[in-house]
Length: 298
Image 1 (cartoon, one colour):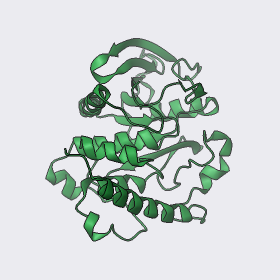
Image 2 (cartoon, helix red, strand yellow; image 1 turned 30 degrees about the vertical axis):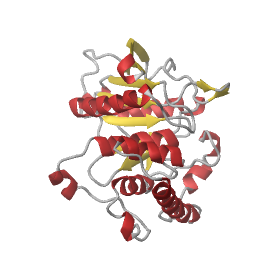
Image 3 (cartoon, one colour; image 1 turned 180 degrees about the vertical axis):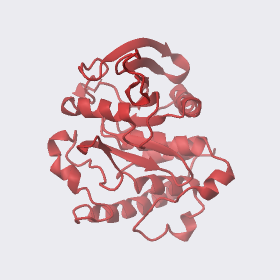
């Protein structure tokens, strides 16, 4: 697609930013539509103090209602993803319990797709804590295989989560889950891929969607904070893999407490998509460069 003009990009980003500001204003209202009060109660579990999860769409784990900084994200045309911060060591157990149980969607599967868009360290700063070898007695984690795939600029690691099946664990709720972990290594923090890395990102988006359809599984996406790169990936996933009109017509539209987008943007697929996913988690698609990338790749 032809590049978006600077004036149009500025206009769209400003409108979306104003709407995001209005959402943030309601964050501390008890039982408010955009409340983040539960996130505020769990400050030690948040990687960043200013990146919080809406209570309304937050992933709640187990009967105890354990907290994760993660939200179920819908695009208004049937697409669903889980956007999360990179889990911290104190939330590793809860994170894996969520993957194992299907806590985000309420539908447990034998597989789950996990997309990581951040390095473990970037520019000398810790961006994610290494969780792929986390030891748990109740949910053992075992490496199956790992391979580098240049076409998607990713290391793909398959892990078994849970005890292997045997005569005493025949119930579906106790079967091990296979985690398909895609670690994309070509997206700088607060920036965007360039050159051949853009093609690799497109290939990754399409590969994850193909895998999701094959496995009928949840798709979790995280960067470091779980908003900029994560939101951009989700927006691209929605825009590059359009669903049939019959699905779009029947899909529930994201709930909102705001007025509709301005009339000049209501026909803009990118503006509509970014605004829709931001109803589920704040700050998704964090800067103008990320918004420009989405326009250029759609």
